[in-house]
Length: 378
Image 1 (cartoon, helix red, strand yellow):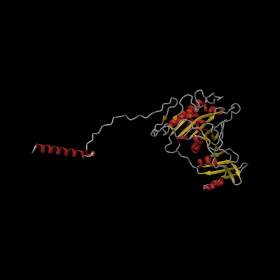
Image 2 (tube, one colour):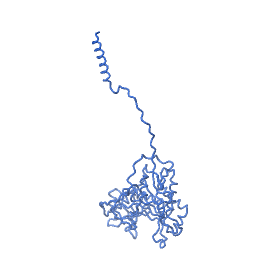
Image 3 (tube, rainbow, N blue to C red):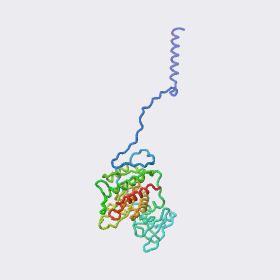
Image 4 (cartoon, rainbow, N blue to C red):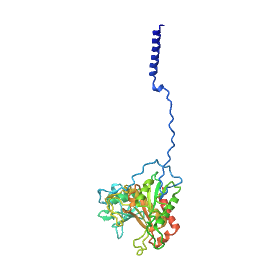
């Protein structure tokens, strides 16, 4: 073969090999895997707060995926234009919903019984308090006797009758509660003139007992404070937001302003936030603007359901005087809560009788047992 021909032949073979190699697809090429750099799994973060240590029950449910906490800056209330309100004939309202209307109880003052699936309401014309299954329940406006029977304000019907008409059950995922022992540090709260007990010590004792009793129930229990420290209302709300509970319960004890003049006043009161459109049962020099909407107002129904449950259990366990489930707006620790929230006044330190009871460990254990039972009840 001539030299030039041989060179041409070799070049042709080389070009053909290069062409074949260029047509090979990426999927046919072996790819060498490059191992990723090993990184340890992140450990869960814990919010360290010297004032409050979370206490987890032994059989508490698995923690939910970590979520960003909500905005902790208190949200100023907004004003809401009142909706269609007015006085309604309760019998007509019941008939429209296929319910039996209220029955008149004969007596010197007109009284009416209203039977619903979860119990019995009793309304007295002109009275700011109704009775619900034998307990006092504060209304925004007193019921009144009309031409066709009992008349009630439409907002009272929506906010006080409807939430209690049917039985209330826990949601399966409701398993975290924050207990808020009232006062602390330089803010001692009220003090008994008879036993010299200070409210801040009694509320902390109460919360710690409840925490102990709830151990093993499946509830995660957290406290806003576990010792004698100062906490503002805003700090209590912020701590609660960090804990992300399903329920908030603030614990307090009561006293009359002029204790020396009225030692006989005693009993248990349970509070929740006043709904928009209703006046409060107690004001304490607070501007009770019925048009203001606070963050906790989105839980009006749940607030009342929980308050009634706690109040019933406290009265049944202690035998204390019933001073009612009441509505109020002045309690800042309730207004800013973004979950169902209540406040309990566990007795009057200005009462000689109740002050002596609260000095007894056995009675304080009854108070704690009642709160724990109301929380853990299924």
